[in-house]
Amino acid sequence: MKLFEIIAGVILIWFALRAVRQGSQPAGPIGKARRQAASRRSETALKATETVLCRSCGAYVPADHPTACERPDCPFAKIS
Image (cartoon, rainbow, N blue to C red; front, side, top):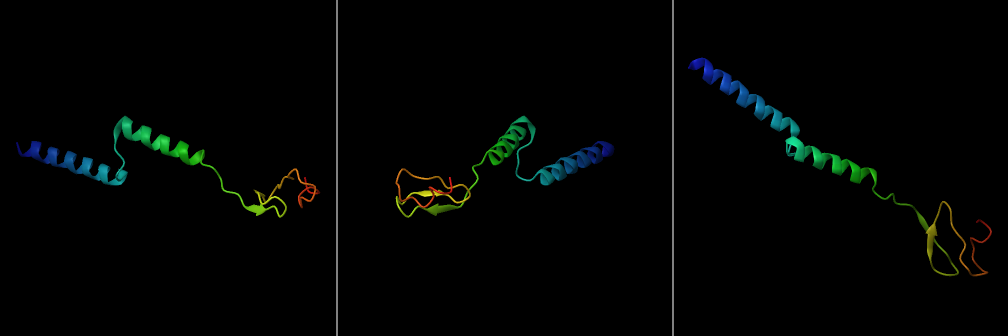
């Protein structure tokens, strides 16, 4: 009987340590699906880009590749 209690204690400690290592993430297929969904969201997240203001129309355009507006006095007409 004592051997059974020792084995049960070791198994409980093993499960407790495993849960602590995994943190607050649930175990099993549901937890795995949540982790995979979170990694997909972070991979497909939109990237921010710097913008500049067009002095003629007041629109914000990307700084790395500004596009010209329809106005003849657009400062980006020569760039694009």
